[in-house]
Length: 291
Image (cartoon, rainbow, N blue to C red; front, side):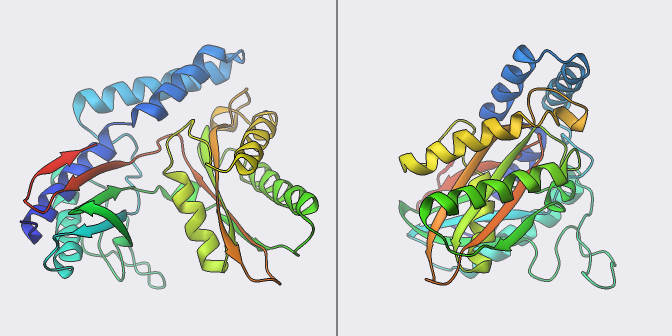
């Protein structure tokens, strides 16, 4: 049975894993970047990141002093008796994880800037729900750092024929990368959301960030744009931590949605090199499987 207490315990474990252990796809991408890098300062930066990863895992301490804003993506399946238990369990789990991992208390009131209660506050932790064909519930924890979040950008482009539209999107993304430079702690993962409404485009970009490194969009034409943009981004020479080098981004992912005939919303959101995430499935009988 899925209870609030079980959700809380899983949340604590997910945050500990996310904060202290970099996903294998991200770690392997950093290793590849270090192996092919020719710029000495860039190699130093990448080696420092990999040493940081090693120590965080060994000591079970957060990868970065900015332990992020607590974001969760929840897939709802069958066998859930009380949906309110999910939010209550996650909220209580965040509070306890803040004390025992420990996590920096990052959450404040948007206007007064006064601190919240152990990384909880008004509508925080953020929880995005989707319906899925599964037994139980899947929870994905994505602690999002402020440095990379602060260079997020959004625009409404004018609808054009597909070739022109693609060029405008690519131009906007590259301008965002150049403006961000070293601020989001590159090498980054870049999420691009195209279509829907204004708020949907931002959500699409955020969802794009959680796709594993190296996994392309299922649509061939979108996958081609991802690859072309990734090459262009890495040709900027911004490099690790903005100090020059061959790898400015580990990957670039695009998610799309249909949109209004008069609209073309586009959003770009960056994830720093410490691209933290951890997931678990809680089955309806109470079993837990961590991914």
